[in-house]
Image (cartoon, rainbow, N blue to C red; front, top):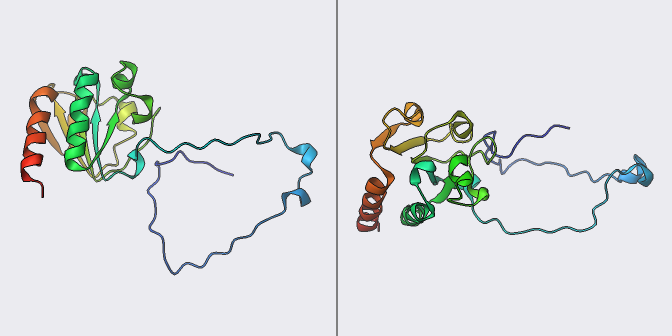
Amino acid sequence: MATVRSGVMKAEILDPNYNGKVIIEDVAKFVPETEYVTKVLDRHVEAAKNNLKGAPIIVAGGYGVGSKEGFDMLYELAKAIHAEVGASRAAVDAGFCDHDLQIGQTGVTVRPKVYIACGISGAIQHVAGMKESGIIISINSDENAPINTIADYVINGTVEEVVPKLIKYYKQNSK
C-alpha cells in the first residue's frame, strides 16, 4: 500500500471509455476479526469550508497582509474574481485566518490556474505547496522577496495599496 498527500500529484482526466472492474473482497476470508487493530465506532463527516484544492484561482495572504481585517480585503477580491482564499503559515500563526486555509508543507498543496500571493515572503515550505500553479502573481512591498523569483508577474506595493485597486477594477469590468 502507498499513500500520497492530497494535491501533490496532478489529477488525470477521466477517460469516459474506461471500463474498470470492481471487486469486493470478503476480508473475513483472509483476516480473522481477532486480528483487527482498529474498529470504527462512529463516523462524522463535515462539509468542507473551502475548495482550495479544486479552485482555479486562489488569492493567498501572508504575514504582510497585517491583520484579520486585511484578510477581509482578500475575501472581497476573491469574491470579485470568483476565487478561493488561502494563506501562508505565518498568517495562520499570527491569527489572521483559520488553519484550514493554510497552503504549504504543513497545509494543503494546490495547483490553481492563477495564484495571487499577497504579502507572502515565499518561504520554501509555502512554495512547496503552490509552485505548480499556472500563473503566479506576487503583490509585495519587498521587491527582493523570495516569492518574486518564482512569480510570473510582480506588483511592487503594499497589499493595502494594490488590492483595493484590483477589487475596484474587477467590479467595474466584470460582466
